[in-house]
Length: 346
Image 1 (tube, rainbow, N blue to C red):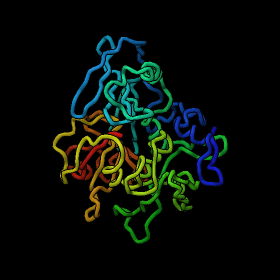
Image 2: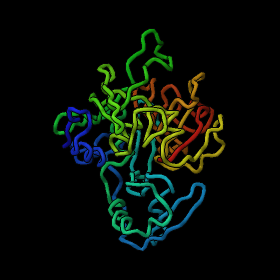
Image 3: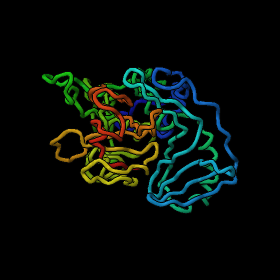
Image 4: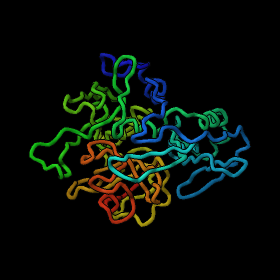
């Protein structure tokens, strides 16, 4: 399933369809056999009601919450955001090499074709799409993200393109100590991981660097998951544009969606408005001109009740939910908790 980019560098129509669908049918990626960093399978499936939904409007941020007749929360849709938080079978996310923490969650994150707005629940599109989305067990954003985690097996299209598998952060930086934050170089984007050239909608053409094959830095990882795999638009610069810009600070301030926590220059006192799937941003490298220099995906509370995130990190050498060189939680006095600055819902 799928093809390499055409000679022009633009993905073929078939590749676009594969990317937009999350490559759900490429290489049997719907399995749950990677128990070294996730559970063998989701828990027993949950019943999917055929109708009779109840819709509630909530504020801060403005959103629509969908409940079943038995009052179960089925979904949350946020005005101005394309991500849909759906309730499905509980899954277990873990990474024993780097942390004893485990995240058990019934959150499934899908990407809608356009941003949500009040009243969309009354459209024909919603009536047709929603039951199918609730029952969909193909890889969502979380499942896709963990396809690049610690020890994840390689996944290939029929044409041989490796689109999934354990990702590195970047090549080693000469002269840097192994304990240094700069031990591995950033600047690896999704096309470096793939090893293929990429032409963006404005005609900008980017070429992968050989030494970066299989690597993505923190913002490159967000673009790999949300852009290449889930179909969110991307562009090549850090300026305003359609979809996701390149670096963490630009995604934080210029990406589409909804700002949930603005950057005040200090760790936020309250982040109860966060939901699984939200993007979280950090200022952890003192002296950076743009402040924000790291980003990740919020997973939800772990088994210790701590809000845990998932990101590609230099010391962990790739995507991780672990505590190597800094606990991957948003609260407390740890390295990342003290650097936590803002959050956005795509």
